[in-house]
Length: 348
Image (cartoon, rainbow, N blue to C red; front, side):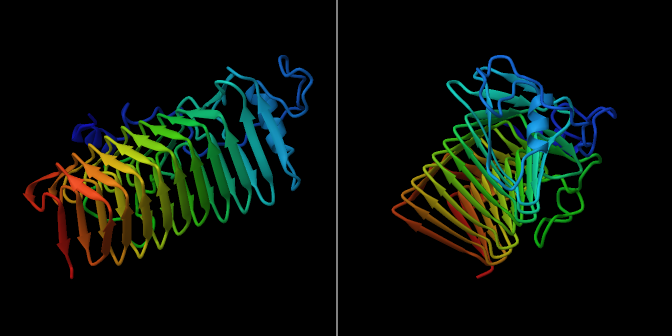
């Protein structure tokens, strides 16, 4: 299981310590070569099996929807340069069979989607994105961007802080805090994210270890987040600034937060609908082993279960001046070392 020791490691810069000074803090813009002919693409238009050919196609994407195909089994090292989408661009990247991998090698994030751009990724897997003092270790979506992923795996992505963080101050309520290292896999800032049949594993961040959503929308369908850790709140997902999320058929398993919300953290009038889902084996160091709600947040659970979670207070959930509804749902075998083995309620 992920232990609280992982949290302390993250406070000093991530699972492997402070990133090497050679690792770029912000992904620089790589030179864009002319798109070469790609072997193994069988003459298909817009096919890539290298970072250079992929980056060239992304660079040349226009307002017309473009489809880029990656050969099955391709493992593309991005070489320290993230893919950048901006403006009125609609892009779809897909592969067949067992899919293809895009590996950032802990030298950059995989992609950023900004200024209304739209990115769809199908059967393409992403690995080892890393940013320092930024959000979105694997993918950053901001300023009205849209991300849709289907049948994908996101593995080992991190958003780390370059200096030790006081886990108690400041909290993330009201926006991004001083250490802007949120969303180890995905950060959505005023944008929309949708994941279908997708799995996220081994994410690290200060807040929202796997997904951090600030003032945006999030939809997960038949997806899994597991083995992830936040050094403050939201071992799997953090929702702040009136974000809205719907999770259906989702599993959140073995996630940990050093402070609150071992799986889910909601604040600032954010809203969550959890349907036909499971939250299991999650842990928080202080409050809300599975869920922590504060600041007029609302969570509605339907046909869902919260099992085997733990915290000092509120082993299943901690609710502070917020609303928790449960319909045909259960919290069982959760524990608290101090009070509220099931649910802790404060603030009226």
